[in-house]
Length: 189
Image 1 (cartoon, one colour):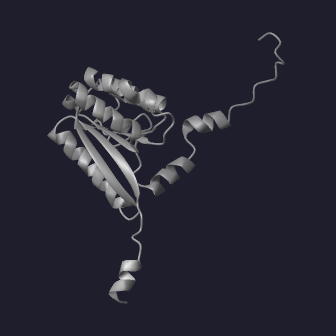
Image 2 (cartoon, rainbow, N blue to C red):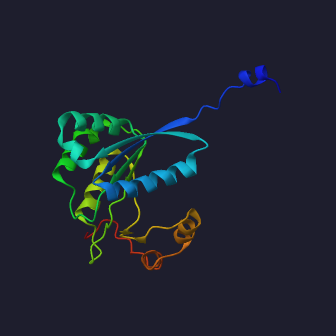
Image 3 (cartoon, rainbow, N blue to C red):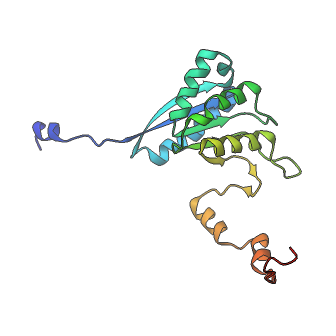
């Protein structure tokens, strides 16, 4: 192969994937970086990444909050990483509310890397509930990782998730084995 043959080869165009990361401090940034490294390891051959990093206190400044919101509307992955809080800070909530309705059905993912998502009683913490609501309103897929969720721990691999999905839980078993309700035809209902 000579030099002119190599010049004629077209480089493989990779899809560009944008990632907006909202983090709290150096520790949460490090945790978010680990998640981003994982994404890159999984998809580097097919995807170019464009990362945008925003520390949560940057969102207190109108110009920065507006720039971050503009990126969030267009992003493929939105990563939120905070410490073990029970509530999202007011500034962060205001920022989410400023753009959540502007995505107009654009595909994307909200990844919650908050340290804990479930209370000792098994109830979702307010930050978990709030972020799930944001994801629903923005039409984003929602994932929480590195923590307990209402369904237990997240699977470590696709194979584990597939196995767990094929198992019949006690709740599903109860539904499947419940005797059918007699027909009432709307009388005395």
